[in-house]
Length: 428
Image: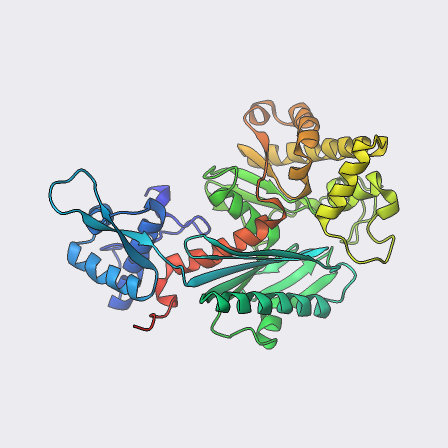
């Protein structure tokens, strides 16, 4: 089976088509065929009904029925006419619609909460981020702030005439995705926090599916589907936040591990005598390369936890660091070089373990990529297995601090593509 027929997240077949070789009731077959047609148009772009029939193997009568239902659900529309060099009257083309159906992705991190919403065709509707001190807030207060962000965003979508198809929340920690519970998020101080239940209790509509997932995993999905490493089947994404997360795409699939906890490289101890980490240990990798480490070395007077002013957005912290560098502060250059060295050492471990083709640097790593990458690449070349390191390089993400929220949106869209019947028929 061609990889385009596999779900990028689960690796399972995307649609049954005409026959899957196993008994299935008519409802299941139709749901699968609706998904097959919708996904085909989504991936291929504008195409005629006859082209969809030919390329999916479904007969024209079935295509007519399926397209009619997808149109009634507001998922497909006709555009055209389409001229493909054929003789006779040009036909109308099918295109992905979903303009009245929204997908919402959010991220709760140490110093901000972000919201990113698109329609099902990926058109950006809302993109906002607010500074918030989640590190020094109780989980309940952080969740209250998250609920406020969701409520405001839903109200804005309602004003646009957009119905929400689902919500996915990214959190930097170990997540039990089946229950929507944050098992532990060291930098947030969360343990056993049921985010999904809290959102439902706070009045988020019960008919809106809610998913909670790890921020680095979601960001890796965003890079794989729409970032600088688009379509690269073996990649690693590293978050550059206060903490450091790692998302791994291997063979075109997200590597989750037995309990969904794979990729927690930020809490691998690299210097037992190093700085204390939020997880309770000392010398974890993120204490060497996280944004808090850079701030501590470059601007010690403004280090995290040293003052009680309003929490600053990470972009503000980076702007200050870059300003001090421009003013000739030698501590900044030394701090960036130190981060680059430790980043390269961790990258060498990843390359030796997973043999990726590219390591995508997100968050603040991307902002300082021109200074960090040369140092990190030299360290990777020195410590990595020669053949693997030679075939792997760094790339700076273009998605900024919003990568996880974008990946969260992709989860919602994927759910609809996999089962279009989750979207209600539009009033005629």
